[in-house]
Length: 392
Image (cartoon, rainbow, N blue to C red):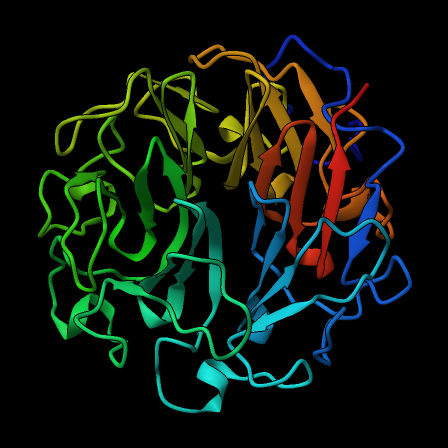
């Protein structure tokens, strides 16, 4: 009898007709790298004005300034102008008393000037909004903070600036509470917050005071529910781990990382629990397997997409666990990415392509910000931020 020495298991390749696509971003790599401390390898630990530790949020502000949620150091860093050289030190610090300091809430009490795992960051009505995830709140400044002594003007998710309990200490959420908010964005003047720990998305039409309740909830049938996938199977309503939202073509796109998909509404939702119209990353609304159940990715599939952006009319998806960026021209069950950055082809994955960090490689991209042709990437696994131009 002939015995086969072939392995009994072979990794499954995902379906997809597109194998190679044009680059989404300049193939020569990022124009500027922040946080690398003079080299391409990660060097994350000691805080300084030029060092980063697991940054998860970036913001290309309309006024020309640039902001980073330096998550692992529990602080925000700001540059008054977009950095034009590698490892350029920040001009502005918030959340710590000095650039060499770190610690949750600056190792003190919770105030309107402290942070505990800041993640999402966005321009909001000329100022700034930050998801202060582990203080279970969102901070809003009417004008950009100038330093550690610039407390936030509005706190959402808590009754006051000194409180920090998930859902204000209650078992159930409400329209005025938050639990691990990780991503947020401004869409047509509204503040849209991914309330990740409550498995929902909240919308404030006009947030003007601390403790104000949200006006709309998606991902759940009502404000007082927080069950995974709304307590049932995966559907056009449910969310498992929403992490970032963005406006796209007059509608809304939400990165539902836990269900390995991006949910898309063709117009901005108006009703609580409104069903998504389409999606990216799965063949059906009831599917949720990473890479569509295959070991390798494809032009159709995603694995824990955390970040979103819009470049021109294309939706950029930070396909985080596949360490790549994808560009989509349209949504739909059969929608395939047409552009790619971070991997050599659509069937490849791996942190830094299973190699060292390079100017054109990625390791768990968690955050995106786009303004014009410039794309900023929070390359969290490499403890750095990339400022990159779109492909010619």
